[in-house]
Image 1 (cartoon, rainbow, N blue to C red):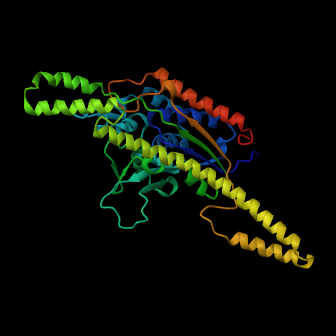
Image 2 (cartoon, rainbow, N blue to C red):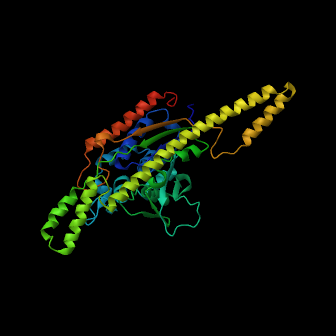
Image 3 (tube, rainbow, N blue to C red):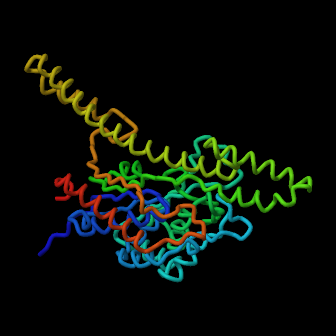
Length: 383
């Protein structure tokens, strides 16, 4: 009789927009072919990782590929007619698209909740008024095995609601938006799970095109014929100032400033997440070394009749020590980092630039190849 392997590996998926979905799809497809896959018990995902993770836990990666290859900007975030400049509000069309093409919403939520692999997704709480409790961290966590199907379906979509483009959504009375603001790369949650013995993670490394401010020049040219009108003359002066700011590398307008701040916040919490995980592993190793050396030195210097009792006492002292991490346990990890490169799709979701299928396939292949390289470089993890 075949022995079913224990599910002791967690997968962690970061946010990354459409490029993140495609790269993560390649990452997941390669893991599915490896000995790692039958051992996966949890998938932690934010934003793009929430959507990719949802399709992974219900074993529908092939459908996700078909869905992604057919996806266009208007299927995700459709610009409102009067807000087509960068950073303007868009209609969040992804929920309807998922419902129509993937049996999304409640159906997807039900399948996720019933899956043997548990999906945990993250969103940001932007409800008001703010709680007076100064310990509030504004992080919303939705574990599938203790969340209703309806709530889980909404949480996946809330996590992917990029707040620089669309308004937040309501999840059980809580106003929720893109999880990337507080937890773009939920590595720490996987580390804190005492049943996780190893982690396979994908971290999206963003690359941004320079903001296109050509629309300012076009607007200035159209308005210039009416420059004799005082309000138009004032508007033209503001447009020229915006063009001058752009030429100096500064945000041309307030909307671009918000987008830049969003990128900084998400990039910083992603980098810190990985840095803290590395520091935690170093601390675990150093504490174990210190423990062994102290006990060995103390026991070696004690009379033989006291050595056994002294060793037990010292072991008890170290065991009772309390640290904000599991100081007796290291978690091996395999982290694949990827940027979209030259084949990246426009992440601003402006409706005037389609997403070519060949570039999408290139992103999927990139994620697959990088994961294959990482598994080859760490054969112990893949065994």
